[in-house]
Image 1: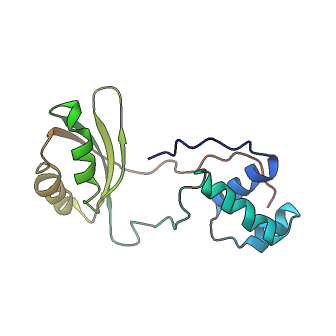
Image 2: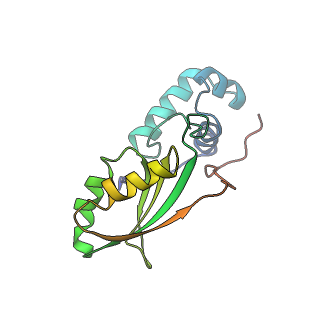
Length: 161
């Protein structure tokens, strides 16, 4: 869930730190500091401040699912029986490891989710044995991705590397 905390007034250094982390979160404080001409200690303090303010949700690795044997990426439009069932369905979706992304949406679907599976048999099992078993899901529409065209973070500042 997106934090509802008061947002900070970001200066150009904060924006550049966020952009550098979005491009490559493996960078050390020293590497970031060198690029921005500030000390590693200053980078550490600012990252801590940005995290406490809820502007940095997590720093994690972006996995190559295909290299890990997960050849199918699919998107699901999920129809709920009743909109007030959203919270319970959300809780159940979080228990399914193949669901890697989910959004409460407007439009035709109540929830739009992204799942990754090893193959079509795995996809079928996830759909029939896990997702359709969730109380409150009326039905789903599945869209199989043929190719990921674009996946990138939002960059808040231009940063020379």
